Amino acid sequence: MYKEHIESQLLHADRRQSVEHNAIHKPLHISAQYSFKDVRDLIAVFGNTPGYAYSRQGTPTVAALENKITLLEEGTGSVCFASGMAAIAAVMLTLLNKGDHFITSRYIFGNTKSLFSTLERFGVEMSVVDTTDIQDVQKNIRPNTRLVFTEAIANPVTQVSDLKAIGDLCEQHKLVYFADMTMATPYLLKGKDIKASLVVHSLSKAICGHATALGGSITNTGLYDWEYYPNIMEIYKAYPTQNRALIQIKKKALRDMGATMTSDTANRIAIGAETLTLRVQKSNENALALARYMQESPIFSEVKYPGLDTHPQHQLAKSLFNGKGYGSLIAASLREDIDLITFLNHLNMIVLATHLGDNRTLCLPVAPTIYAETPPEERAKMGISNNLLRISVGIENIQDLIADIEQAYTKTMQSNV
Ligand SMILES: *Cc1c(COP(=O)(O)O)cnc(C)c1O
Image 1 (cartoon, rainbow, N blue to C red):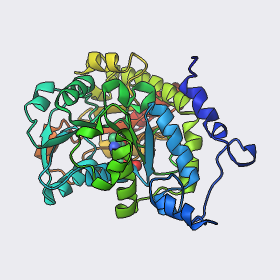
Image 2: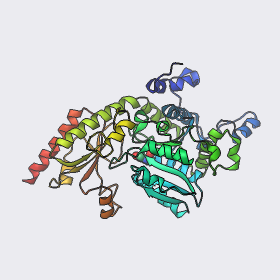
Image 3: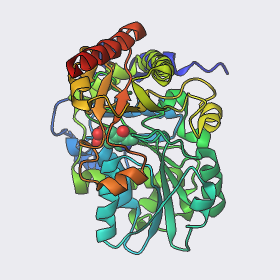
């Protein structure tokens, strides 16, 4: 059967789910509760019949976004949360018990690292490994290992994990492979392609794209056989095997944490997602051109971008992403004798901001901001120099981005004399 491409599916997803009055978009359902004429229907929703009772557990508008994320990942189902962090916390809190062990990449988002250290306080064991090296992952598997966590392209230094090899390893050891695919986006790589069991996206980034909402999602790819997973609660074993984990994550986490996505947020993210492909293509194209310019420019001493052939995982990234792109994140050190503050303050169009995956190009000095709580020796080990800049490349005209950097440099050098 002919299968439409994801660009088309995203645009037509709502109306194919029979929207009220044949509207093209799913409307904003703002009601906190849902009423029932027959109490048996109310009882059924508390059991395993799909439906809505109280908005903390979901709304039809959020469900429409979940449907789109499932289409993007070609998964079996998704659940949305109020932020990417809430989504990651939901999986870890509902699928791990005290005494369980998990393996995580060393190269992960700082806030995720913070969450994982909290799990350790509650008796969950953790090994922090180099996920660009499959041997390091393998040798840390223990009898009580339940899950392996990785990111696709690490922020801020852009390491690319050996994602497919980790997928094979997890399959072999029946471990849950939990992949944060935020920085790759489903356009470059789907969780399924690396044999991930569960995929998390921070929807706040490229999927929303316009920096107008925070959100997170968990998708079940359907590749893991949850029959093998020891921490599925008795009550959720009543559901078909494939859906058990996602139901447990949804029911338990939305109830226990209450980190619910609102209908308004779901609507903003769903509108943003319609242009995901166009935006990712453009930002990735810009990022490659900008990284190449920066590599040649005397303004920067070192440029890290998976699309450059000097990047340690360039070949790996090329094969993982099929040459479609290399992400929108560049890490670059400003030449030592250029004053960081003066240079950044002279940027005109590029925004000094901490977000990622926005339509606008954003720049941030890494050490004194997102790594301010990390001691300098630790930062050095992670490849974070004092003059490291993180640039999240947007969809502006590339010549304007280069011109902005050049004029900031000229003004900085003039202010030196
Ligand atoms: C931003 C981000 C998160 C957290 O998402 P929020 O929506 O900000 O909570 C998690 N993982 C990665 C890779 C991110 O970039």
